Structure formats: C-alpha cells, structure tokens
Image (cartoon, rainbow, N blue to C red):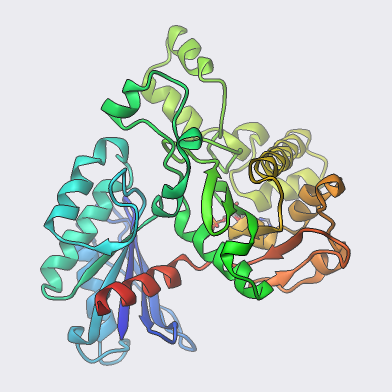
Length: 399
Ligand code: AMP
C-alpha cells in the first residue's frame, strides 16, 4: 500500500510517499513560503536529481495540489494516478486530552482539533488546513492523524498536573502534554529492537535534541515523564527557546512595560542557544564559535550539557534505574562532542561511553557507543517520525 505522509507547518508542507510495509520512500519533498511571497516546491526521488520550482502557493490546498501533480507527473512522478495512494497520514502536533492514540480522521476529529486551537495556536490551523485540503483533493482516501502528544498520554497525574489551582486544569486544560512523541516512540522502540529486548523490559531515557529539544523517560514502554509541557517551551535550552525559567521573570518583565506578546517572542524566538551566545540558534555555528574561544557560545553549550545531565539524573530517579540512554535528532545524532560531554562523569549512574566509538561512528546510522563495562547502553538512533506515521496509517487504514 502506498501511504502519503503530510507534515503541515504554518508556511510549509513536507511530504513523503512510502511503499508499505517495506517502508521504502518513493518520493519526498517540501513546499515552502505558503501564503507568503517566494513559494517554492522541492521534489526529491531516490537516485534522481532534485526538482525545484518557484510558484505562488496561496494556501495549503494549493501546495497539496502541487504535491499530487508532481507525484503523478509523467516525468517527475512515481505513481500513475492519485488512486494508487491508499491512505494519507497527517503529523499533528497536538491531540489535546482526547486524542491519545493515532486515529482515522473524520468530522468529529476535525471539530475537536478546531476546539483545541486556543492551546495549539501555531500548529493547529496549518494541520487542519492540510487535512481539509486532502479531503477536497483526495475525497475518498482514508486519512489518519498521528499526534506528537499521544505517546506521552501514559504519564501519571503527578507528572502532568502543574502545582497551580486545579481548576486551571479542569477549566482551561492547562497540563503537561509533552511533544516530539512520535520521535520518542520510534527511538525507544528501535532501542529495544537493537538490544533484542521487549520495550516492557527496559527503562529508557530518550534525548531528542534538535532545534526544539525534549527528553523523555520511558519505563516498560510507557512514558512516565517528559520535559516539554503545556507547550514546547518547557524543559532544556533549545535553539531559540529558553526552556524552563522562573515564571516570575515573565510577570516581572511585564510589570516593567513589556507586553505579553513581546515576552512570548523573547522566550520563544530570542532565547536558548541564540539568546545566550548572541551568535546563532544553529548548534553548528555555536560549536564553531565556542571552539574559537567565544565565551558566550561556550556558556550556551555548558548550559545545554548541564541541563541534559540534570534531566538524566532526575529521570533515572523517577524510574529507579536506567538501562538505555538514547540520543537522536539533529544535535543528538550528529554532535559527538555533546554526547561525550553529557556522558562524562556519569559513572555513578552506570553511564560509561566508549569515546573512540562515539567519535568515529558513522552519521545517519544506528550505533551503540557504550563502553563494554557500561551498565547503561548508550545508543545513537536517527529518528524517523515519517516512517512511524506511515506505519500507523497503514495499520489503521487497513482495519
Ligand atoms: P533538527 O531540528 O533535528 O533538524 O536539528 C537541527 C539542529 O541540529 C541544528 O541546531 C543543527 O545545527 C544541529 N546539527 C546538525 N548537524 C550537526 C552537527 N554535525 N554538529 C552539531 N549540531 C548539528
């Protein structure tokens, strides 16, 4: 069965066409600058040159129309007709309290997703636009929603309820939801597979470290805690996000004349690696500046390493032990020095890295970088959220 995976952002739309169950990617691409000037579509097929076209993309439906046109094009396409697509899987950042597992998308699901836009204002509207666009252009093709929050829905109340008046949870749905769930689910499952064990047998900490970063504790296949919270703002320092800060900083700055929107922008877009280093939100740039002696870049990285270490300690305590530590996403998969620094002086927890293997393991491949005598396995696993979405979509569409 051919499965089209769609990931709609506010001004972008990523797509991948899979052949399932093989998991083979037939084509993938990216529509950029939707609804703004500079619309571009980049279409890729394995072993072929990329195709790039500049074209106005008025909305997500127009972008999808381009995707379908390219997929079925006689020269650039990989299928003869849209009817070959058996189902569409949508990446959806937020499933709220109700959508706790991947599901078929019907009117009721869309209505619920619309009702939670207030708690998901950035990612909700484009995802809904993507679903509506698909409905119009591929009327009878089943659609499946895969939610970034759903893997975290097993968290116990003590982990997801904030210690603020309980009515704010009941009336405004303010709680920890957690994000990047599809990535944490994929890498924790893959870690168990690599070790020849069942997820039920393992205590795993997964570190998804990219532009946005989150760390999750998975005990026996179930999430018990995660660093992102009501929004993706909570947790460790990220590219431009601060991660957790004393909330009084917000009210103090507002009392000093900043508006809520200005504080939000500062915490979301001007903080993290960018805010501390003053150089860039891109970890590579910050690492290069730090290597050349830039003090603030060195400090930004120290804060990041220290934050990750603290959560590893906290989550090991939360699970009363740790069997596997996983690094994934842009920084986790590629930044060998970060992995080395995070795992340094962690022998008390049974974490011992083989620094040579860590320094030489090929990028883009699963790797075990633990020392032979490490009690905890340290694994590097390239994440594959799209494949996970394709798997869920194929399963639910076949039911
Ligand atoms: P992602 O959001 O998963 O795409 O990750 C993006 C982040 O990964 C950016 O901060 C990149 O700088 C970072 N990244 C990618 N390659 C490397 C590398 N070789 N060393 C350090 N960071 C990297």
